[in-house]
Figure 1: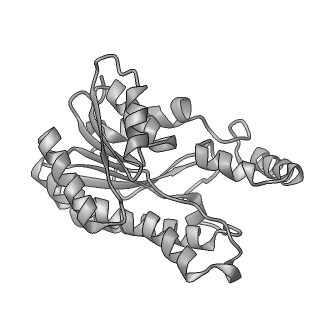
Figure 2: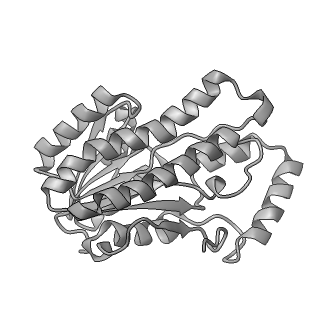
Length: 258
C-alpha cells in the first residue's frame, strides 16, 4: 500500500474532494484524520466508508478560519497519530458575483475560508512535520488564480494568494524536509453541481460547449475517484519528496502551466 502508516490530515472532509481523499488515503494504508466545520458530516462519511482494514479514519470538528480551533485540532491530531506526515488542505468556498457588486462581507468570507485557513492549517502543521523529519503539504489552488474568472474576482484573488503562499513556504520550509505544492483540480464535485443548479438550460449549454473546447481529455471535468485520487495518493506519498513549490494541475489539460 502506497501510503501505509502515513499520518495524514485532510480538511474539508465532510464532502466532495476532501471526503474522497480522506477515505481513499485510508484505503491506501494511511492513518487519516478529517477536519471540517461540519464534523457530523465527516463522521457520516466515515460511517459509510469501506477501508478494508487498511488504514484508519477519524474526524475532528474544526472551524478552519479560527486560529484557536485549528491549533487545538492539530494538537489532537498529534495525540491520535503520534505526529504528522502530510497535510492536504482541500477545504474552501466559491462564491460568484460581479466584481463591482462584491460586498465587504462577501470578500471577507471568501478570503477567510480560502486564504486564512491555508495560513492557519499550514502553520499548525509545520512543527509536526518538522519534528517528524519532513513531510508534504498539498494546498488547493485553482486555475482561476492564473487567468480571468468572470463573476469570481474574490475567489480568483484568494486562490492566487494561496498559490503564492505555497511557493514561499516551499522555499522557507524545504530546509526541514517539508515540501509544499498547489493542486489545481478540474474535477466534478458537489460544489460544481451546485454551480450547475444555479444555471438556466441555455447557460448550461454555453458552459458545456466551453468545457468541451477547454478540456482536451474528454471535454468535461474529471472524476473524483478515477482521475483525482490516484494522483493525490502519489503526491501524498514519500515518493514525491523531491517535488516542491509547484502548481500541479489535475484537469485534463484545461490549464497548461509553464
